[in-house]
Length: 76
Ligand SMILES: [Zn+2]
Image 1 (cartoon, rainbow, N blue to C red):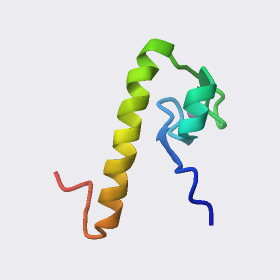
Image 2 (spheres, helix red, strand yellow):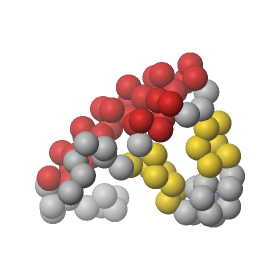
Image 3 (cartoon, rainbow, N blue to C red):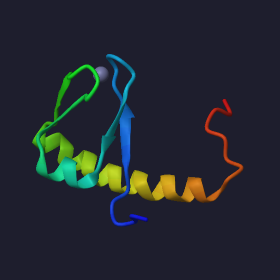
Image 4 (cartoon, rainbow, N blue to C red):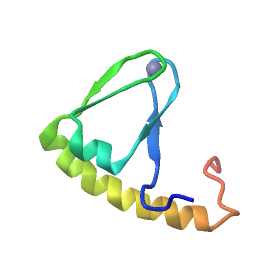
């Protein structure tokens, strides 16, 4: 069981493959690329600083949400 690194990510807008993004990879690499279609996603440094803060907050929110098992995101 690994608990140090929380895996999150996003779906590739090109092929819908789920791309895993860790906070570490956001911190240390300037771009992510989709393992499926090899599309590159450039991370703007200045923007990603804000994004990182958001991401960390988001992780906390997601943790809270996941702890509530009855929560359904598709409730709209
Ligand atoms: Zn892709």
